[in-house]
Structures are given as C-alpha cells and as structure tokens.
Image (cartoon, rainbow, N blue to C red; front, side, top):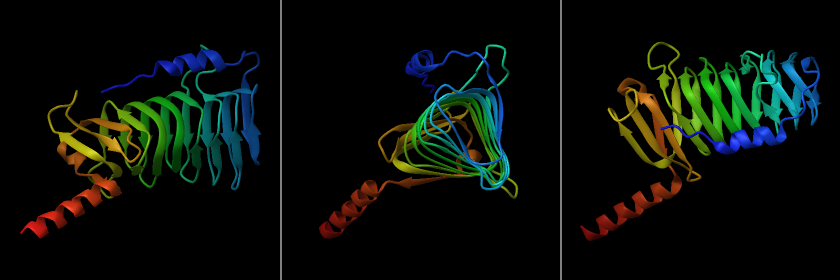
Length: 242
C-alpha cells in the first residue's frame, strides 16, 4: 500500500527558495545551514564535525568520519532540474538526526547511524548496510523500495514500504524491531509477496509490502505496553474464573 502525500508537493512549492548560485560546500568543522542557503552537494568530514541544518535547501548529502548531520528544517531535494539524484549517504561512522524538514530524494543510504523523529520523508530507495542502526520514532516516511541489512527499530511515525528486501541469511542478517499493536502478516496478500501491517506506539500505521516468510522471520514484533497490560488482565480474569 502506497501513500503519497499531496502536502509534500505543496510545501516544496511554497518554501523552495529562488535558486541562483547553487554550489558545493565541505564542512571540515562544525557549522550551520540556514534559510536562503542552497547547495547542490554538502560534504561533512572530520571527526567531531556537527552540521545543523535549520533552513535552506541541499541536493545531496554525504558524511564521512565520526561526523553528525542534524536536520531541523529546510529541505533535501533536487536543487536544479538537471541534477541527478538527489541522495543522502551516511558513512559507516556517521550519524544523521532528522527532527523536521522535508526529504524528497532518490537514494537514502545508511552505513552508520540514523535517528528519525519527525519530518516528511519520501525516497525511492532506502538501503541500510550491515552494522548500521536506524531508529524511527516519528515523522512520515514513504519508500518505494527498502533494502535492509542492518538493525532497524520503528516505534512511531507513519511508515510505508512498497517493496521490501530483508537480509535473512549470512553472518550479518538484518534485525527489525517494531513496537506497536494490531500486527497482521498475510503471506500472499501483498503486491509482490506477503505484506505486514499494523500500528505503531503512537497509533500511526505501518506497512511492509513484498515480504516472503523468510524475510518476515527477521521481524521482532513487540506489543505496546497497553496491549501487554490487556493480555495480563485477560489472563488474570481467566485464572479467577477457573
């Protein structure tokens, strides 16, 4: 099931700045990207570098070393019509924190660590590598494809994947933890193969389409505390009746 968000296009039209002199910037020490700044490529390098984006627009983000990129606002999307991409690439030691803003890209590649607690994120391809760790607790996320090889934890936000590949064999198998309720896996009901649906802790829906049974085996479905309490109360009532 795919949900495309009309408001994404509206927001892009409203807040996209006039593009005059888009360029490339490399951060080798901590800095900030603000309203009115436009870059085709942003590189974040060197250990300890922290870049905060509070506004503006960038087309491609690449991090390396032990560096951090924090998205508080603005947008990561195509800067010029002739651009290829755009994309986000987080290196093995890098970290991205997405708290707000708009992300509309082709590839979202995570070799390092990602924390997503807000924002509107639309990407054709999400790919995580062995050793990566991604924690999603909020936001609206829509992926055409998800290629998961690391650890993925989802507890909140609306999350949609139209076609999934979950690494279920080898030494670096993926692990996906989902905290929520109303879990339902239909092995033949998806567009491609099976489909997993349900609700996250905050009540927002999630969908993983294109899951075979081996891929589904890599999911840990953790009931929310309220659901666990209902199970416990139900067990107590049955015990009293017996």
